[in-house]
Image (cartoon, rainbow, N blue to C red):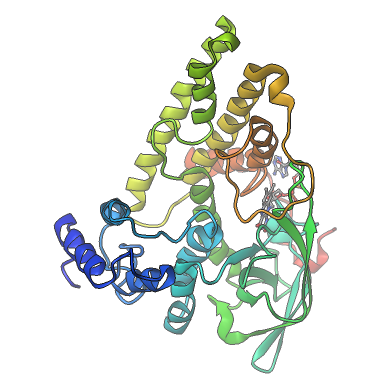
Length: 396
Ligand SMILES: Cc1cc2nc3c(=O)[nH]c(=O)nc-3n(C[C@H](O)[C@H](O)[C@H](O)COP(=O)(O)OP(=O)(O)OC[C@H]3O[C@@H](n4cnc5c(N)ncnc54)[C@H](O)[C@@H]3O)c2cc1C
């Protein structure tokens, strides 16, 4: 341990980085790589893996110093799946070799990641998945179909769960892998969404060879490994750090202030209620992040993500109503392949349409309510009749 656990030490190290690599004259990627090597990428990660083993709550100290100095960031919105989901899973379950191979280019954004979890027959009931991985020599041979794979068209790597044992109950026969998206057996086809864009894809896996060295965790333990990914996903989707009036509430509040001719008493009451709820959600997210300092997120992230989806849909609906006919305009219906989801830089129609997916992605709101009921509130679980039945004997 280096003693870099307090804010003063992190400031000193940040100043050292800036002196050795002045942002004005340093290539962006060189700067990001140097930042990773200095342990200032994610300070709570271990030394040698982009961090210093410092409290996670001190990251903003580094970020603020670097932003003030005009340093480039790693464009976190472009690489959200890598940062928010793959990285914590690799950190918890990866071998030393896997951590050293994957984490640095993941953090710098040189390698984009996607998530090959959902299938046409396995979404909410993810453990029912049917993509097969069969051992062959030092490799696994994977065949199956995944769907709704965000950023697959940009990705170099994927986190993948596949069935390695069909003879045991569904949760027990799954194994977790890192899949090379450049393998010739990986075919990525766009899926067009309600926004007209194709953020996500269907992915066909035909005799894809994955070396056993790219397995994360034990054979058959993939469901447990996937819980780390899914718990982090909910925090990544619903728990982003925002300034006051950041996120969906910002544009509608701005329109309210700038366009007095649109105001009505009824819309005012609704805006005030939603503004307060958005602020409560923001502060709750802050508290959740502070709890994360102590470890991995648990099922509490489900509550955050639930509130995020509901508020986004209600706020964007209010914005469309406030704008009247203008709110029905939409900028571009041609199929586009966006590199990131940007709620604030777009028109109201986009926000309204895109937020529909918020209550589906990362677990539907109904399923998250079940998780909160069972795992946060301790209420009786839903009856499950398939718990002790071998996957191959389940009806599909
Ligand atoms: C924008 C977007 C991006 C996505 N990106 C990815 C990605 O990158 N990688 C990936 O793997 N997946 C991704 N997904 C997929 C997402 O995780 C699934 O769509 C989601 O888990 C729901 O699964 P499903 O679509 O199969 O719906 P189903 O599971 O078939 O659900 C259908 C309906 O039944 C309800 N339901 C199901 N089970 C229950 C239950 N037990 N109790 C009550 N109601 C229930 C659901 O709430 C829903 O309303 C993405 C989805 C969206 C919308």
